[in-house]
Length: 348
Image (cartoon, rainbow, N blue to C red; front, side, top):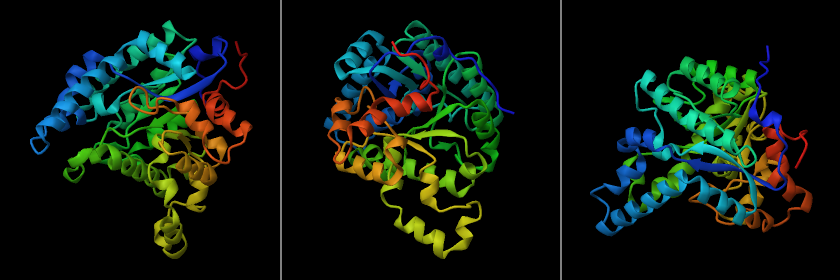
């Protein structure tokens, strides 16, 4: 049975302009409890890093934290970028709660979700929102997902690329995925960071690690049969899907030559890639062109990674080689309206 939530977005006109699906929020009272587990904190205090690098990290972190919490500056920057609507998500690199016991994690996520819902309610003309869940506790995660959508008026939730020791396609997480499909909820997948010691030097956790995490997440969704079992899921992967969409030759070869790898798959990996959505935050227009060629322009959405990412995201999309004007408008606006169930609403 498909649940029919009532959402704040249904009762309002939609402003004209671009929709940014990748924009982070920091909830200070939550961060106070997650700070010691944050990758930003771990890197800023890493004794293996130079004193100069640690100082730069601390200064940058303080500025980023301030900007994520400042609504007035956020709207001013949106106006400068030409973004009409932002989809707000908590910064998982700062305040992911999966380290905590399930009930404490739930309490932290609920505090953050209530704050994001309040931001959306205060400025429904500028914001949509996605909540968070204690994903390592699947039943609690499913319940909080439903609260986010049916009570708080949020459009879905954000999750990290791993839930404790579980990959996101783990069979134990099926109650969460089943609820997400039934609710028609958007699920945005964004890494909380990879703490592997190999990725600590030179900020490799960010330049390489995040993209690795996204590739693992997509692989798990495909190989564990989540996309096959729940084909109506609305899943968007951050940072253009990480490495997965750009190096699928070996994955495709394994599908053909190694039948044991496709026990949960009824179609080629490329077909599953086209069941997902991806944001445009890849920082290289030729790379974005490859993504669009691989999955289709109808599966890519504008994402800036505010406040740390692409400063001119609309110009970036428009600079992508080979895109028609119609495809540009799909990526900048139309695809997001469709994904978030707003495409048929009256525009302001």
